[in-house]
Image (tube, rainbow, N blue to C red; front, side, top):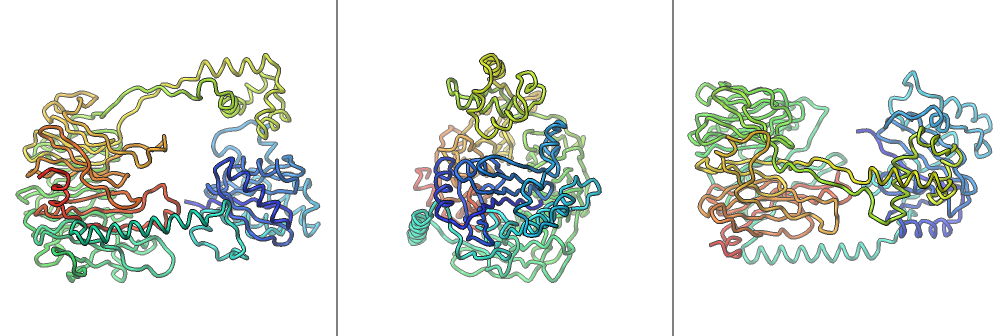
Length: 636
């Protein structure tokens, strides 16, 4: 991924006036800014969302008549700017105007950039020709990364504190920023920070209470990380031999070889009573290790790898040595042993059945690209493989996919704008129709009027009544959008008898296996179904998603984890369902396991994806007293 820079530069030293304008915009548009000190007569502003939205600079220009530059780099593929003077857009530039969609010659001409219109701002008059040359379409691909073009642009203009974004600065990337201690956050975050400190203290107190009561058994966090880089992640699994866990801490090094021994992580174990430190086992693995699964007896350990290392490895866990490897054609996202430990199953873009005795593949099923997880029927004759929106049934004797089924397919209708909302009507018209050159000609909208409408939607009132009526008529004809939806699939498991198939999607789904074998195109209605909670009930765009399912045969309970940090249960005999555990704080549970003695529930947690600064998100484990949770929920 390339750089995303977005900064707005206002020619003034009056911080009070600028701050007042940004305060107003922040309240009206629900956005945030970082405002820097005046340097060489310019103040730098960094809007959130990467500073990619030019509507923000339009709003600033409405309130300030100063000279204003809005500079944008998008994924290091595009450099663009907007220049305002006296509240009007004077000039604009886009190094790749056809990047998102093909645009007209007229629009390309508008965004070529005319630096002569602001040559009075150049510290050196001779810089004008250099600017013109810099903005010429890069047919020879002179700039591999567009932030290089932006860097030369700001140097010629004498602008400072430009090559960054709100998110980068908030994440601590400030080496090239001058006067950071003088930066002001808008709106003021004092109350928000105080509330966060209070919430954090409350969560800490709640965890201490749960630990004291013997419900939260342990929390395992990664070791401290020195220097910059990706956060330390964790790969783990249950230890059948000790009723505990095994894990490795991963610090990814994408530029180093797969078998780099210097950075090979070590295996650690932990087991009841859980209040002891992690214990090294004297065995290391590749830094590419991704998932682990131990055989039922605890004799074998299998691991799947990613990050260019497309290998499934099997260790003799008693001897603590590598037994054999199976090569795949992509990252190995799922590994599992048969109950009798004769076979091991591994999944990537193909599903491979390997013989433990012969240490080699005996069945390879190809043509299942995009697969996420797999489960093998207790008979060993079939496998259920899920991709993003498809359940595939594999006949292992024939070594081929025999069915492809959708789960929860239905048609939905979307109202593109709220009925009677003129503001939404006009905004939809502007974005949907007026960007089309043919429609603009049909409505007699010239370049100046088009620019005026983009700056101020009320300018649409300058159109003739007939033109406005045409816009309204076109919108009414396409107001409702019909589209097909399917459930996203994240995990799959069989019941011990093989009579039921459990799927994690928008929640827990329990299917009759025999009915699935008879289905065509669409999976039958589930026998039982429980939706996952939304991670944010106030956000209409948040979705109920269950990421992982596991089954407790002693209690007939199907369990699932989700983005909302909740473990739900479903009794597969009577359909009774509810919440088993709500983890303290704003966390999500990506993956969880029951220990082999079903005395502990182990959750792989992190902060929720919607929280800012995701490059700082830390993965950790929480271990819970499973029988105590069941008793509290009335399940024992």
